[in-house]
Image (tube, rainbow, N blue to C red; front, top):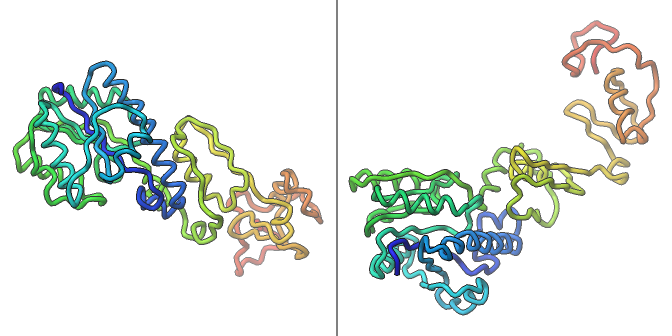
Length: 325
């Protein structure tokens, strides 16, 4: 094999066996589908490097007994190497050992669930290994999507707390202890990023989330997404993070059936069918001028508004005959 070898780590996309953290959010079937599509997309990216003779590509797969299924899935005639070992440390060590034994001078391992991968990143990694002992592509979750070395370094993988945010700092510590030079590539995210996005959602919204799952498609950057039946807004928020600054996330909900029960405007405006509610003119006009206006009957004079900001509840101590609602 040539001097540059890329080890592409993949798992057969069996529901319940891949992206288990993501599956807790979107379900086993959807998580497996998302992983499968992203693994295929990333393979198309790195296949272009193989075709240009930038590197040799080795599909490092798991489980070993799924060799033929994986070949049919990926439909590519590259080198296939089963992942061997009890844990990721042993599997990485075995794969790197095999690659260097086959004549590799610069070997990199790449995860198959990385978002935003480009051929340029892989090329840059191999260039870095011409003048550095190690190269790392850090992931936003505290791990890495890529690691490479210019010689066999099994201690890089020993004692790691895999699947935690300690992996990256532990790896950098190992590099320092081994007195190796290192270059860091750009930071990327993997499919589990949805879990980190959810952490920013208010508990009240999470508690009210309903449905059979969230069919959020892959690779939404710069897209416009319309969510019909957005409910609590859970999906809309997650999608807004995935589409990025140049994308758009739109949520449409509030059916006639839902409006027949209640309409919650904010933390102090809850409108219940058949129950009058005192509000200021500002709130009355705001509602009547929207598509929800047909569901409300505005009674009284809205020409005078008491108080500009904030529009909050009247204090019990207030003697004023009128104020913001």
